[in-house]
Length: 634
Image (cartoon, rainbow, N blue to C red; front, side, top):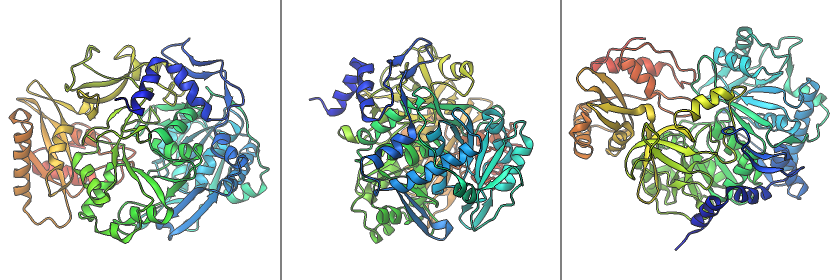
């Protein structure tokens, strides 16, 4: 018996261009396409060649024109800024965005120019992004508070005409001044932007440089609202530099047309959200999740989107997410598994959920890193709702594999992100690009062409795009993730390909070992890294964070964990060393810095990652590694 998913995936398989032409009927075009797919420069494929549209029109103006101007569009909730809450309707958003577009035009920004946005999680950041889209400028959002040298490399690569920033960001218990970082970056960079516009926040007022810097409020007040500028579907909408990039950054390009179609299609078919509902992606606009599912997809679909300036715990407690869902009536939450591991650590029984009305909340979606089965099952138990792991990347811009809730939910297999989304032909191959049997771990690739919404290239670097993603497995896009497909076509992402370790000739997944460790009742989160070993080449080393309130001895727990890995994976894993740590080093988006820890353990030279959440953690980790026999060096 076929499902709606089977019908959709089959329709895409049978005629991909017809499938994406039908999906494109869900958005507004100023000029229709000459060709759905332009393959003339394959493997540099382009979608909706010849078409003209505008991303801002589809996110804002079309809803006002349809009589829905009074509907909430952006809901701002900031516990760290003194519990500020603010709602912008679609009509109010249209007014703000048009004025911001006029502000940019007054600065000389025109179609095709770049604008860097270096701002915190405030409504003005969304306004800035949409204003760029409105006038055909290309935005590049850099995570607020990024180090000056990292911002400088992005300035030199994007060569922005203007930078939009703010005086500060806010973290729990501290204010992070942005202006000194911005000034330092401009001083370091070869390219000098003509103007900077700074949103002054009351927590920290920035000193403006006369002649270069403008006050946001004053510039907005003086601006004449800008009209929509039609752009080609194949024109760039934004550049997003991949996290962790050092040296020459890799600028992922997103186009206007394919991005618009794919994200609009995903809201109903993957997330099962209807226009008028409230959708919450608990991420940051500096990451791809923020671009796709805080800003663009919900607004394309006519939904209210929540902009949350806070944390899952500590602002003020582990019930923060339940409060936001309850107060704003969110139908779905999309966040990273690390957020739920933090909640689980502080409130292991989910006791705080009972304080809130979650009656409108239907589904939890997890992505951004492996959703270990233990955390996923814990979330299922405390929420009594579907918890959906799905997998995608900065480069794809929207899900590659998911349990497509709008096409009929499949049975959940813990540890799997379910099946390929229509548009993606996922395969698992060996080093020679030969498909491996079901259940066998290999490199996960996607057959070309990639669907709409995925990166068509890197910013001004077509050759680098081909070299980075398309050369190693000809005819395929290299995801750099490793895993397997089971006999039912379910996708299991186990680790990055560089997290596959070779133990005495046996290729083993660190993700599989982490799955075993995370199932221990005392473990809140964990990481397994492969460290150098003279005899076996590599051996696994486990690092675990314990749940709050655990009283058992660390040695006893580690002994348990060694036994569990030996019992479930086998002696071949050579898992003999485990250490308890207070916390794991992560990027600001929640990814554990396994590669950096491996380099420290192996005594290799390493540099402080630009995206690290708290640099002090690496000192703690270095000390712990020394205690278990891996002294490392900085």
